[in-house]
Image (cartoon, rainbow, N blue to C red; front, side):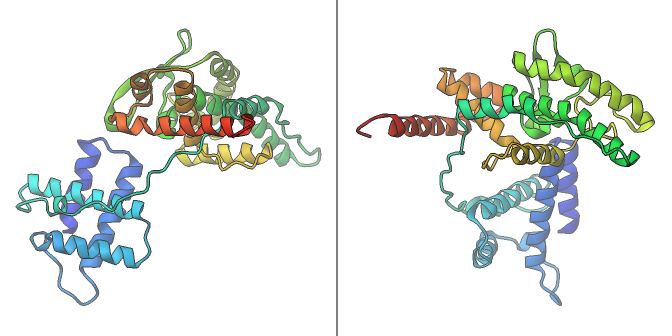
Length: 319
């Protein structure tokens, strides 16, 4: 089974162009299933021994471990994809996971900031004070200079996330040639290696304009290790990672002293909901977000309705 998992992950990497995040999760989920099937001092289980009863027992085991239904559903999805691959390659006769029902998940409506709250947060980035260097320490002076440089980068990141609705991986994957600053357009490679063109607004362009000379400085001082293609760079001149963008968001939530549980995807949620509230077509939003299914985009209709109800409850005298 271990060799089959390796072949499957290699297929995802080379043929399906799966992200590192997907590969890591699928690998972990399949490894956990294998460990469940082969407890200590027991003979290895063959792929042909796996049927729907074994998979149901595994889900029961996960339930007993108090795993959330969303995590159980993800692990089942990984098994379905894996066994589908094995069936196509002739390693098993059929995909036994197809006969196992997915745990019913509660419908979650994403928590969205209002337009006023989002504008206040982004406009407030300009008032974040630049760090001051201590006179006695050359190292602290250099660190303060780094923080001042990266402040403009961080503003550009947050403005562009809200202006375009990008996934974090799409933002960090942007190359310089993907940004058409004259026409305010981005070329994005999304899930499944699908390309789409997304416009962005004037405020994001202003932030990019302030960041561009900072980017040049980061490249110039970093030497051979720098990534000249990447749009967003870390202090070493290398391409930023997804976790770094998450830390940027948490940093400014803390600095601006707002009691919000914000993460980079919150800006994507806000992008979609605010467009919908202003009359944008749901199909157009689907294209901008890069959703393969319209049902995924329709979550934002529920969020928009909820915001309208909150406004109504606060404003109407008989609410």
